[in-house]
Image 1 (cartoon, rainbow, N blue to C red):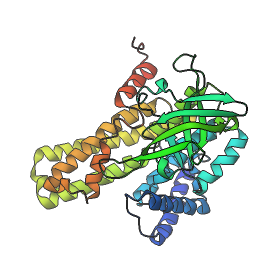
Image 2 (image 1 turned 90 degrees about the vertical axis):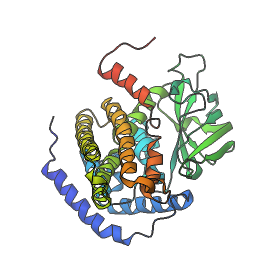
Image 3 (image 1 turned 60 degrees about the vertical axis):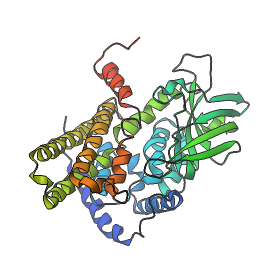
Image 4 (image 1 turned 180 degrees about the vertical axis):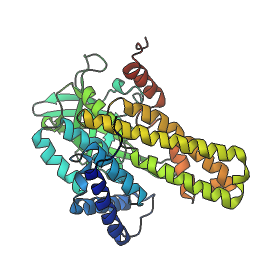
Length: 377
């Protein structure tokens, strides 16, 4: 497997670096991290800048390797993260690009790429989180529409979203993983109620969504009726395969900051801490190489990440939590200061072994799809 970059890819890296160096100093001040409407405006403004410069379509029309370079360089430069555009750019958009009709791609992808429309993810339910296939939100066919009723929870960015990638059960008599469909639902449709959920850090990037006989056109179904589980696996492969690439770069940069802080405040004298930071450095270097390997595999097999994304997600989730535990050891009492970015990131890291599929689910995927072990009874 070749993990080296071609001359063309390195030229892309140089052009991107030059553009970022010119564009970033002209950005407005960052909004309050707890003000999601302001963050949406800021994030979408950055997405429009990317679109005007010709970089917005890197998530779909570029090769997986160019996408990797883009995520690496924007993070290294300190560019704004996708933020409120996370679901549209990294989940729904790639899924529509891979599975949607020509009309659906033309209808939704430009709005996502320009930063005109924000998407949220309506997958999990109160009784169907890790066991996602147990979802009970119903969609009953009525002519050219589905009538949808049910409840979703942990719906990312629902508070500021225009569209929702929604999983529904269209055949309640089918086997557990069948009878599910993937719909694109407008969030302003009659019958949609959003109730934000507040996190430990005080932000509201998640919400409960209640659906009371919401009508969704059949034309807004991505994939065939009752084939939604397969389409969902495409979505989750993107979520677990490349969506966290920028965060690996950020974690490696944080390790450097932690080492410098430890030298300043004296905690570097602790050999146990030094070994801990050294091991974490090796962990994230290995994760970066695994990312490159997964991207190389995706490039060779049509652009959709494979089960290797679950290996990455499983290991990254725990490494990130260990990183912020190490940060707490370096900061000491300052680790309790909610005004510090590291403290808020530490609270956020607690969710990573649950978000995008729990670690238990990832272990099952690795066991069954990579190691070939039998399914549990």
